[in-house]
Amino acid sequence: MTDKKAAIDAGWNFDNSYAGLPDSFFTKQDPTPVRSPKLIVFNERLATTLGLNAQALQSDEGAAVFAGNQIPEGAFPLAQAYAGHQFGYFTMLGDGRAVLLGEQITPQGERMDIQLKGSGRTPYSRGGDGRAALGPMLREYIISEAMHALGIPTTRSLAVVTTGQPVTRERDLPGAILTRVAASHLRIGTFQYARGAGTIEDLRTLADYTLERHYPEVDPGENRYLSLLKEVIKRQAALIAKWQLVGFIHGVMNTDNMTLSGETIDYGPCAFMDTYDPDTVFSSIDREGRYTYGNQPYIAAWNLARLAEALLPLLHEDEEQAVKLAEDAITQFNKLYHQHWLAGMRAKLGIFNEEQQDEALIKDLLTMMQNYRSDYTNTFRALTFDKPEDTALSGTTEFATWVEQWQARLGRQQESKASSQELMRSSNPAVIPRNHRVEEALEAAEKHGDYSVMERLLDVLSKPYAHSPEQAEYSTLPELSTRPYRTYCGT
Image (cartoon, rainbow, N blue to C red):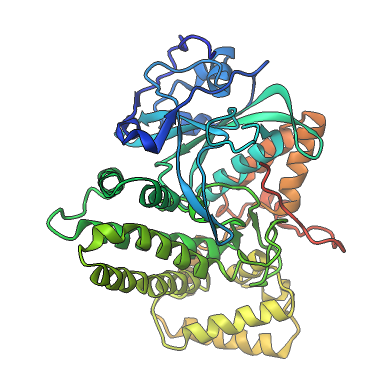
């Protein structure tokens, strides 16, 4: 059994609205206590934003809460049920190694899920041990906080504790638990579950709950469920464009890993692209390249179509008309995504206004970057500071021609060159979580218990648009290797 309620005055202010949904959507589930929890990473700034007492939580009792050994006052621990298409195949799922403690109401009145990931078995574990290894939990902490600093909607990481107990995968690894903070954990897969395992009224209750929690501005006089679909499409179009603009590859875009809130969630085999190549894939289990960098917009549209299918009974009482409404909504995704992506690419090149030839200018650059294996982030960084000679494209006739065309394009807008450079500085990060830097931090922590490498990396990543001298060493590329970089789910 989990220990008694936590006694420290940590500032917890829980509500549990998700627990008001029909019982089929969750199972009440306490975390499984661990042997000797130790707090190793703690996000003080996030804690303060949440209205928590950061000092009080950096204690043994705080570690006990983050490990699930103690339950904060007002929490209602539960494991959520959901389904999902995993690599295109539908299956019933659920929180197999996570427990939602409750929803923290912040001083700003925001409602944020507090979830423990790696906290033990649940009814949805499907034979798994419900635990997590230290490396994947630290990876999620690093990448999610880097994404937040880049201005990309994302779940956040509040803390990581080690458990004092090994987890066995191919070998024994140190166990850990991540405390994840999210606008909610409502997923496309949650609606797929409701449609497949619940009643139409269950589906309607879930949709009403989602509207109230994430889209309260939707006019109740309209077809509110169609409006819900359209609003989710809008948020996901904006989100995926932001991914593409910084070279982020999620790695496992299953429908259970796409949120209704529009946040990035589940940082398993994710990574950032170095050399520009739309076919880049890192995940060891994505053998067919389903979730490559270039496929991400198409997969997002496919996943949203699955949400539309789940919502069909609510869109219209006539099935044929419901399908027509859903199809019309889904067709808007590609247009919206393209608008966001094109606007973002213009900003990366210092372009303020619109010309018809802009897309060709952008695509010509990307084609050259792919052909000459140019680093994605550093190419735009070099252009930001008017140093095209620092790119892998330098010295080629076609790039010289392109630079002339680009400079002529900038000259056809009213804004000054200084204004264009400032726009580029705020649109092109100096640093991203380079894969070799992340691995370096994880190795130091896992093998040597040294978290200083990770702390330095987190500090640099917290200000990606600073373009400061100390960031230079974190922008360097890894040494050439004959082996492709691979990431793993860490389950």
